[in-house]
Length: 173
Image (cartoon, rainbow, N blue to C red; front, side, top):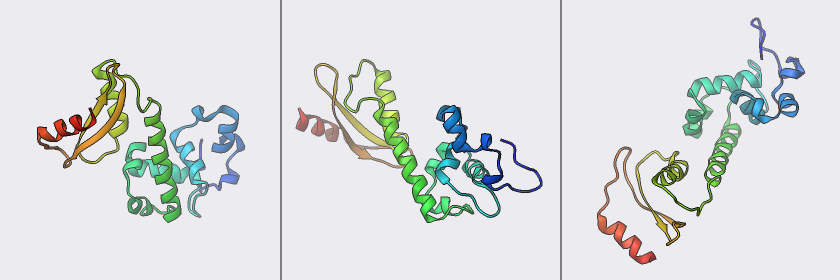
């Protein structure tokens, strides 16, 4: 979508075929860019910029969608045009997205390789800001029957005594 270089357009002034909602209806959600999907969630812009420009600025401010997801409520609210309600809605939407991403792999699925474990844990733990020592408990058919966080560490380390892992395993066996 091209916006006038001389002034910001209100969304009503943007041609219909370039508006995110109309584009989603016509082309489907997969055809939309990240900023267009974000603009739909934001709903409104400010007096200085329309919602599409606000969405673009948010993504630029936090560099990526992942950066936007990692932003605190306070960091989001520091962006002009993002008040407490929009910040809360963004955080809730991002959390819902994370939950959807982790639910795509069955919560208690079957493990056939170490790659399966890595992919499963990556989806489960990618939003954490500190190291976690996690145990997965499998039955004799290699199906996950339980996940347990044994220890939460610092930003770059997780130190736990082996007896904590053993204790957790023995209690559940």
